[in-house]
Image (tube, rainbow, N blue to C red; front, side, top):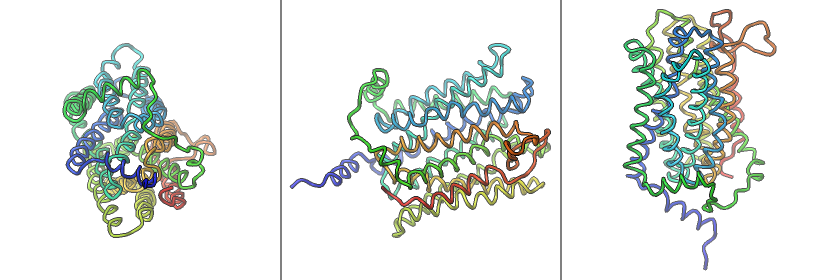
Length: 439
């Protein structure tokens, strides 16, 4: 008697999952990879003020450079997820990391190629966005196929903590390098470490044969028959899928705003403050918060709570409660209070790693990379809008350009208002109530 097809597929999936030692090695490696991804990504926001002084950029031009990352980032999300589902997420991650590491190292050289500094830097950021856009969809695809469901939240939150750790490293080490050696050293530091990480993964964790096969598939466009046809039309008719997409959009948008503009906000609102404080403390708080969310999520599931109930709880913490502290950030003139509120908001946002980010893997494990790519594309588009345009906003057109929360300079000053961070997070938390678990 033949076993049911669903049971056969489940057994085959379990056979391809990592053993516990393999999972530990890959978790640590991907944690470092995510850290380096954000080291490269945050290098520009950390250096934006110094580069603006050197090249004579105003806030509008600096905003163009910062937001241009998302112009490229939003274009490769779906492609990265699809490739991850097809040829393996680890191969996609390695190939993209080698390219963005090289671009990051070359950024200071591009800046001094000619007098068109703004054009070259914008081009560099677009390329970096294109290359980094595949990372998280490929990562989602990889973990959905290789990690058990009961361990998925802690694994993803641990790997996701690399985003805060990378921002912390660049904020701390980058601030020192910026003071000692100038802004080019920040790019050399983050890009050089990325290339070293690529060398380690290539030599120790991936076989040369598999990598060459993946390159051949990409170069020749050969079909890969590992997956059965996915019912996309049926999938996108599910309310839970759309809830996941909207919630991911909200989480990504609010995170991108803080990531891009928080250093400038503190530097201009509190000019006498130390850069290492506001560049380090919020992200230092976020690392244990991310690990705690993963441990708590897996513990609740192992205790018998429904998976979707746990995911919703984590998302309410990550979007709902964090928005309260984001709102407080816009209504204080105290430096200490601002650091506390920023730290609390960013720390609670890490609960999204154990909420919607993992829920997408629960909904459709076989095409989690593609689905995450669709969701993160929406978040990247929102990030491009709010990470770049806030610096251009003025009060002359409030109907078309509503004021933002703390992160929009008006006549050269920063001002508080209930803006996109709070609205996006509350919308995402409310929408996730539609999600009902695995479809």
